Amino acid sequence: MKYLPPLIITLSLMVAGCAASHAPIPETRACMKYRTMMTAPLSPDAAAALRQQCEQSRQ
Image 1 (cartoon, one colour):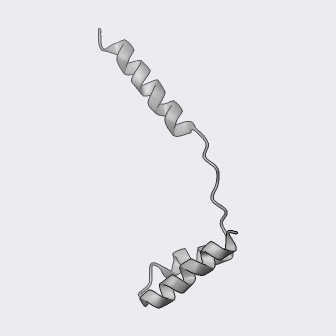
Image 2 (cartoon, one colour):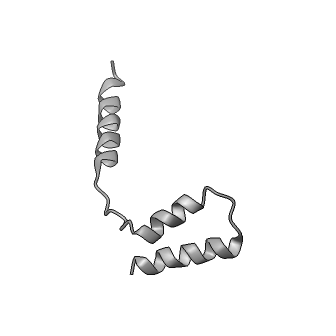
């Protein structure tokens, strides 16, 4: 019974921390394509080009 209050406090803080809203990352077409292509076999230079296009599209 003596562990119940600290347990409740800990669980409450965990739920509150998980519920905090974060700024959404802008999702562009270039970034969606980059993430899709990362699951396929891809040469390093092609992956770098897709990553660069994604980063440029976010600006």
